[in-house]
Image 1 (cartoon, rainbow, N blue to C red):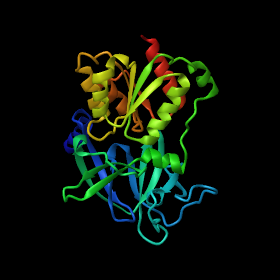
Image 2: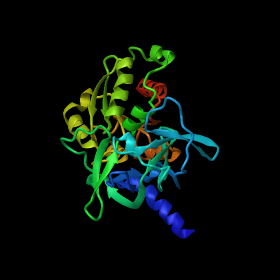
Image 3: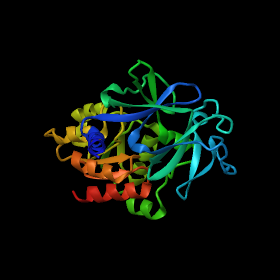
Length: 300
């Protein structure tokens, strides 16, 4: 019992030390990939047969009954342009993850190991035009670990709600005129979705792909920024550390901050509050985001 408690506390404290624990796994190219363990619900062997979904994306291999809930099963290899995993003929595994308050099942070739890495040791690849790749880390052996942009993959394969409802669009229309939002996220899809909401609300906005670049921008333009919306998982510096850095700086102590993350479990709301964020909003619900932005800025 004590060791289990110690392990739970250790994992909880990762958010206070700019670290991330990842599960590494392999796809059909035998390359090493990684995913944040906080997003993983369970790992199971893939059944040899799945119930197919008509007219779905080719990477959607069917649905899986997971404790009475049907989950969409995505072949992660095929989703990123690799050869498909022949789960009907050979051993494969399913990683069940929570993204954006929804469960999704990903077929992988084989789980590998657990590793803890500082976000400072996780780097955004420069000069690489791969939409599904968001960062690179390294295993103890020196082998590269590819971190995938799951938000982009989910958007491409099953779609993500992008538009404000008519009511939210009407209430938010023009409310952001004359105000400037700094958007910080390493996912190009997430940036695009955020900018779509902010544009419809009338805000001007500036996107940044990392917390370090956002801090550089604020050093020049902080007087012209009314709100920061930041992801949590980012190479270099995570969103919790970014928010604490803002709160420790005399010029940004009262700058309004929303942490916006696909890590939607309730513990992240508490961690966001502890880091000094004004709000935590789970990705990606345009109406909720619009409401929280409006209510926060109306507080003055």
